[in-house]
Image 1: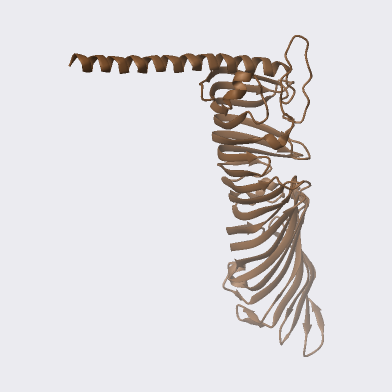
Image 2 (image 1 turned 45 degrees about the vertical axis):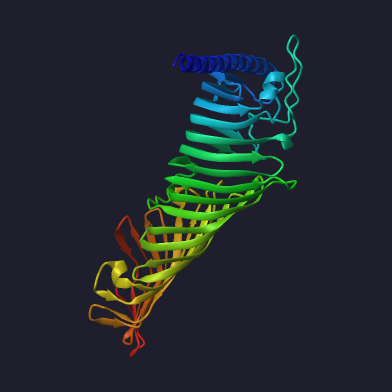
Length: 433
């Protein structure tokens, strides 16, 4: 029994000794990491601005954890604020006090705010890994590698907020979670999700999954993009469209000029005097232009086809709609009129509500207005800023034709012009007013 007790005491003693060694070495590793952190940041040029951290800890296996990290640019503007996180470094680099682009292998960021500014080449403005560091008097020269080919690390973002700016576009994303792997000799893999976001686009959720091929001289996109419940009014079209659109798409092309091809869907869409449902279509994005094709929707008991384009930068757009077999009783909300209508509608906008122009023409088949039968109704229309104008409206029937060269509705009030009746039997033209 005494022998067993001695063995147990020996094991406990060895365990305590090993734990003490581990924590002692971890403490020394932490001091070394802090020393490298302070000396390296005092002379490096890869990161612009000032980087400070509240707490920094490390162990002998190369895992470094930190809390309350702040990164500000030279003007004092916030680039990053991170509640907590960690990164793995190569222990040998810590021992030799040598910091290279390949030193860090794994990064995790929790509860962070990241403000990313991209230049025209989609490079981060506040990070330039290709800069050569300048020797400062009294300080050792930090040995950052300028070779992008040496970068190979993973990164995880948990519960973060991301603000990204590119050209004149800005996106603020909440509840960002992501897993990424960067191997600059091969590719950049990404699995990215965000909750509600605002800015140039506003939507309820976004997902990006795929990779960027880094082997070619110019990197190539291969990503899948899903946007849920995008608000079209956030695009600045000048039309208050409150219904939401969802999209699934594929991102291709070369960095920094992506091409996006996909499809869109809306449960319903309300435009002036038109109510669409079950909207589906295709789109192509390139160089700030969104081209929309193969759009189909239900409208007023019939259906329609549509196409158009939108420029994200200057907000100009062009929409063409062709309606087929639209029911007049549904459109007019009256059982008095009954016919099927073919509609040709065009919308032109520049982003200003007052300048949104809708115009087109229509033609009906045979029908009736109460007891009055007619063969067809034709006409043209324009609608801009609350003024709806009709021209060349003609009602054809076996008894004669009624024509109204011009009338308009301003803020719901009818202003009727001349109305004429052409009698087929007598050939006479009579004016009603």
